[in-house]
Image (cartoon, rainbow, N blue to C red; front, top):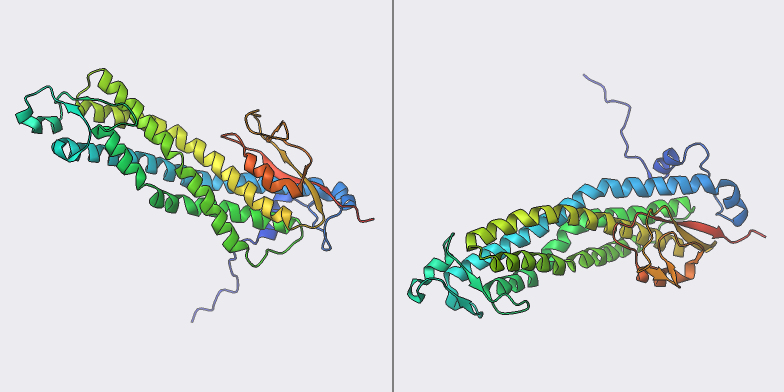
Length: 317
């Protein structure tokens, strides 16, 4: 009779993961950080924190980018399907359409290859605009559900890993708080559907002005938006995962009574449009913890890659 294996495989804990990232120099004071302890041991703690932030965001990058890309391309296909239905039944839409063929042969409007001229003056009433409006009005719930898992994972790690490094314990309401905040980030991503809508409209408008057929318009839309979706989804994922980690870690910092200021480090770009107190939010130094909420409201530029880290603790004497 085979004997049970004495070894067991465990998922690494937050503490063991951080210990591996911080190396032998990592030391987390059992009775909390002070200005004096941070001066001695802080470098290893910051190293572990930045590395963990990078790993967490990198692991979630592909799932979120894929979800964003799929949502964008799904909107394109939904708009195309809606236009085709409206084209086959022109009396069922509210816009003005002119036909190159006799009015009695209205079914030609829906045939691939039939010439189409539409008054595309967005926002307007033509079939394309009507389709865009209908599709994007109903897009939010499905999109948020697909964005939530990677965002919530990164935000929870941002909070949990930072809490461990600060020597604290997660608050009882932390999981519910992270879920609520992650939903807010996911809902923010759905607001970029306006950009998706405008991108579709621009391709359609250009095609109509060039006299494209309905079939040609559909092909141009599919081909043109494939490349757009690829780079936009990557930018969205990179930006919002950074925001997710930052907001999670910020909650941990606000719970640390000894922490006085934080800083943003490691971003390779600074955009003056995103600023706080007259300074770019990227690589911002010496921010009082009490101002974190106001600072995060100012936001970061797209493709932000910086990490929010402890800067100064209270003195032990």
